[in-house]
Length: 115
Image (cartoon, rainbow, N blue to C red; front, side):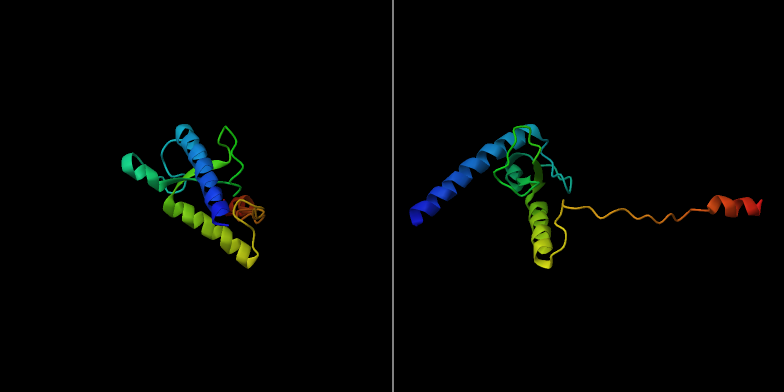
């Protein structure tokens, strides 16, 4: 059992290292949420987030990735877990339709009467 767990962890580390290195080459070293810039030793605080939450989906163009700082990454996963727990739509899932209310409908007619 311990051997299997150790092997799974090594494989995960290898996979993460590969896509992390590719993501750091593709994208500017800026958190996609808060805009904080990273360089030097602080670069380790910049993580690769899988937009579809599938860590095996690593297209070469990086279209399933975004770089997030550790704080924004934790927040993103918390939102996802909260949505699962409460049964609501998951972040990035179905979009709520925009409002159909038109606040200024008929305003031109009201203004014509004032002239």
